[in-house]
Image (cartoon, rainbow, N blue to C red; front, top):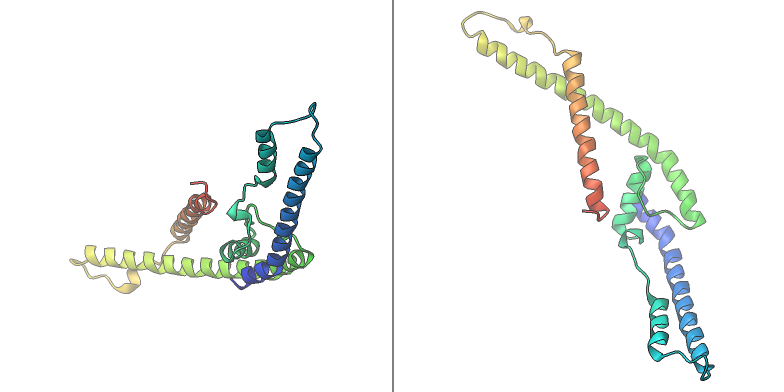
Length: 187
């Protein structure tokens, strides 16, 4: 989140300056149309509707909010850099923003990988403990007629834990694949 706020801080002024420049271009476009309209003669006269249509074309711009730096898009951009996923339509335009992006990635990607490795380790431990508890419960249930000690309960197998981790990972990736189009406004 902090990285996203820094991206927004670095890029917001430049985006505002570009919007002002775009406004100047629009004003110049209308000015040129009126200059041409005042120089009309009988032979090159164009109807007023055509002049109005030309003016409308000067101001017709489709704005995609996903291309604008806001707190949300900046946070997504920072998340995309740190996780190496990227974020679709948004990129830093200023030199400061690009340099920060490089430094943020150099620092953020290793930290993210360490976090992912730790999450995987904890998930592995959780899955192993859960499997062992389920096996112990099933053994106790079956052995209510016979005497079985806790030493007779086998440890959880690596294969079963790996398969469980694979399914959790596939679910996580599928969830992200379904969520990203919604975040991009495509659903």
